[in-house]
Amino acid sequence: MKITLIELLKIIAKSLNVKVSKINIKTKDVDLEEWDSLGQLSIISSLDKKFKGKVKFDTIASATNINTIANFLKKKNFLK
Amino acid sequence: MAASISKIDFLIPKKKNNLKKKKLFKKIFIKTGIKETYRANTGEDVIDLATKLCKKNKDSIKNCDGIIFVTQTPRYLLPSCSCIIQDKLKLPKNIMTFDINMGCSGFVHSLAVAKSLIENNTLKKILIICSDTYNAYFYENNKNEYIFSDAVSLVIVTKTKSVGIKNFSFGSDGSGYDKIIIKNNKEKKLEFQMSGADVFSFTLNTIPKLVKNFLRKNLLELKNFKGIIFHQASKVILESLRDRLSIKKNFIIDLKYGNTTSSSIPIALKRSIDDGSLKKGDLILICGFGVGLAWGIGSLRI
Image (tube, rainbow over all chains, first blue to last red; front, side, top):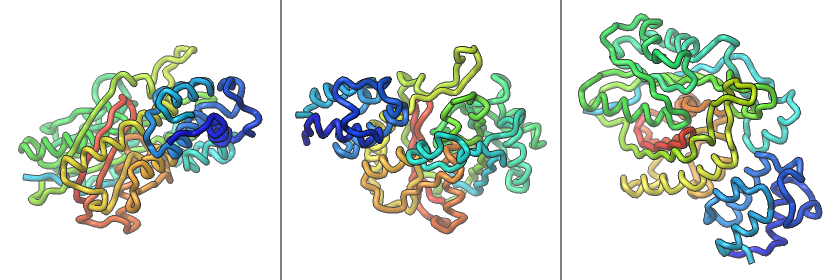
């Protein structure tokens, strides 16, 4: 299964409970109050559900920006 | 020769952290499912909690010839808590005592050790005590107080004719040693620190595979178990594991007392027996994971 960047942004925005217009590929964890350790956990949990347990999350667990998450998913062939 | 669990009990300190009055409660509760956590009184430690619980169960612990004390928050670096407990409980001096320094997988480790000591005829009746007081290592703004409760649990393993405690499988990955750790903070005070996202990631990457391999190796299926009790870490972790393993029923989520580390499996087991969801003779699967990073899985008939 592959998702688009827009879909990824929507998943991340929903996980962090912020409007999708508030984030983009350059957004860093420090830019958003909502992206704390719990926010990170929500992102992992949402992506795990989306990809039905097929993604290893080590990189995403330590990612501090959306670009890193997107690049990781692209490398693993989960992002168009 | 076989070993079975003959008694389970637990004790939670009365003092609450009053989470509902704290500003992050709603936000954190959605993820953890934990409404309240409990802490020991100032100055009260794992030995005090264990002594209280054991005295309540003094008839059951008579004739124990071994004590295994599972803790990561001992009173002293040395001696071991189990030695002190032997004296506090006025148990005979000709018994074996030792501590196991393991966290959330500690109960599974101690059960495997107790089983093997009984099955090789070294001991006949072993008292396992799991106790931790993590709250003593939380300071202001440490969000872990929303998750962890201090607690003590007691499990007695006895020599029996029929097999109660069955098979185990274990693992560890020390490369993640700093993901859950008590170490000096900037003020050089020992503080509990946890990287929640890393622990969550480790759990999702490791535990489903462990469970599947364990079942395959022992020719079992999830549907064989009347109860599936994983370490009660938090709602988001338990629900993710349940979904990943496609567990449809008998998966126990019991976060009434929060995450009680090595006591979480004994507490969930005891509460499930008390409320009638599990009964004597039921086959159950237990799985602990966390600090180390380390993990353990086992099957037993209660």
